[in-house]
Image (tube, rainbow, N blue to C red; front, side, top):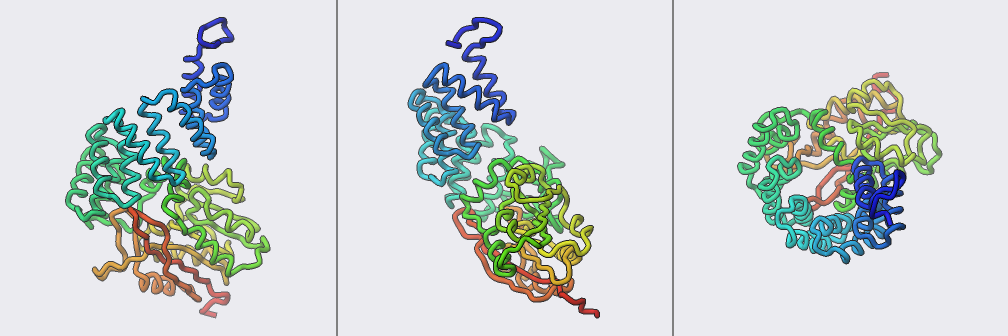
Length: 413
């Protein structure tokens, strides 16, 4: 039994668990998993070992094993609030919203001041469209942890969703007072008030939003019924079937690489570019890309003179307001006859504006503005279709699926 120190090569059960959990927190999952398993070999049924091995396996994309271990650990230690919260997280990411809600509720029955359970419950309620109830839990998080980044961001977005724009603006004002240099607070305040709206999301905002989010990005988008990569892939298949692996391709704003599998059969060389290093690290293990580059998109495109046969951009240009510069850079980066495929969110606001920065921080664009701007930089053969890109707060997000070509022969010739 490793419950007591017996020599220099033996450690106590508590020491072994502490070592494994530290490694787990540091992201050294291979070593942590080995230690958890050795603990369970020495002490079968040890609840802590089962629980945290389950959490680790969930992170590794093995939810069935994770759920079995976590449920078994809870059956042996049913009064541990954090464990019910972890169970809820696995269930939620598996699409079991009702069971996840029950797990979060049980965690809060055991510990009403467990901020993480309030935050997770709030996120679940928001995504289910129960925004008012979500606000109650976000506010509870802020009472417990006033500087909680996710709660500050989401309570403001939730209040704006409900039409309480002044209350949302006050949240962002206080946030900017606490953190004057925070790009997320500044951007959302502009979205909420219409004051100081930037032409596009600044680089630091994109990095701050997506770097910490990368680990769970794919699972979240799956819960939102995210369709942009599939829609882009269908356009590529329509234009280039059969796939012959001859194209020079760019995935512009590749994120975790969700477009990669759709593009790979058509590409001789596939480049992915993104501002978030965290996202690029998640894209790398997919083995779809020949090259991954951390760069701002417009600057990267402007340096790629007639390099690509195909450029795709799924759910990236929603962080651009004005589109003329990025369209012009895309045009110059395409070879004559090359294809650009992208998605946008469609603005249907009756304020007469071509561009709108919405309360969630993404831009939407009027269809006529998109067409006019594309044609102004020289694109032709425009195909623009309405599309539902995802669901948000229980409602579909209206989008545009666009494909355009650079003319094969210069119009000036």
